[in-house]
Length: 301
Image (tube, rainbow, N blue to C red):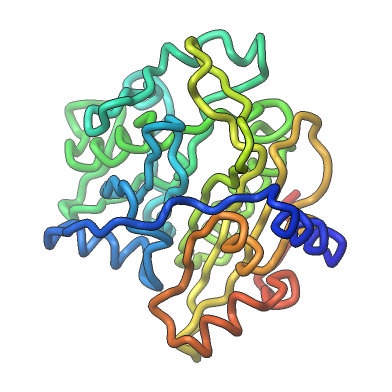
């Protein structure tokens, strides 16, 4: 763990890491503010180029043509997703951005480059009866709830998608897959916890690897996930922060890539937990999250 953090600090000092552009202010309506409070109760990581959905919030970079981060809240109810098939398996271009990616731009990339369409906010936590009408999104249109269907469709918008190596990273056995599995299978399904997640990209100052039909979709060299769980006795959350490189050969266990939140902030320029008082925020973000995670950390099978 200390070796990884020393290496990361070396990247910062030698200029091999970069920060994102300063955030811009954005006005939010009442519905958007409610969703921000649900998905980012301890503060938005940035307010730059936000797309506010029912099931998550994302910051999308139209120049890089990828989301920089997505934040979402998941509770056991949200695991009630329809089967990912037919209309619920279709990726869609996002009409809310000018330079949106078409799903066709990824065709053939798995066989030629190994890249799949990788969700930042995952499909399998976008379910549930979010409007409280007693119905869920369902493959059977005669009983399906249209509002909950919309939440599922938003998960598959291409503004929530990044190129990720399938066999080594976001497929079974990959580090990204293991972290997502730990969240939904252990924390939500077994522990029945409410969990808050920010998942995003770690980028660099030099020319990035690109992919897609026109070679203009940037491929992040690394990613991060920050997981927060509320403690009933205190006002601050328990936190785990993961910083996995974008593997091309699968290896390692998820605890091997746990770092402090400060490391991820230094590499990305994002500001997590800004709604906490400064003393609590500084303590929480400075802590090595492997030690801070306590009894919640159970390695997935």
